[in-house]
Amino acid sequence: MAGYFKALAHPHRLRIFLRLFAQCRPGSPCCADDGMKTCVGELGRRLDICPSTVSHHMKELRQSGLIRMERQGKTVDCWIDPQVLQDLALLFSPDACGVHTPSKRRSA
Image (tube, rainbow, N blue to C red; front, side, top):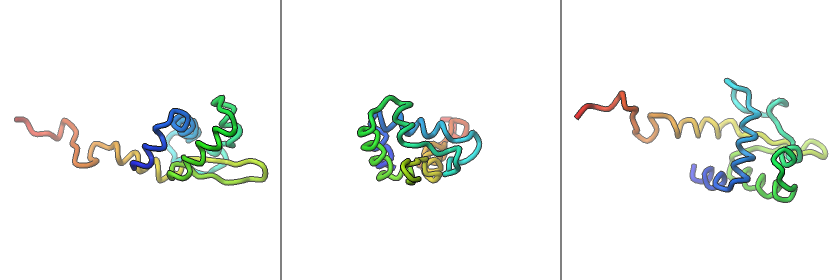
């Protein structure tokens, strides 16, 4: 998990990740379906980040395991690894690491 957060600590990488997350359909897992993929070049244009910078940050996101990438001819499609979203959801769940919701705490 620390690797995820290290990769997301850079503002450009966080913006890229959030843009990819926005491609996910509400109520369904993010996956490599055509509607949930984004072309790397298009992603850079939408975020107003130059191509070489986008490539660098995409590499970091891929190496951290946050996203997946696939070449389709001249384009490179990318999407969030569905397991990442499950991992993050579990981390922020009330029961993570023994943290309890206020309704489960005992009165003093």
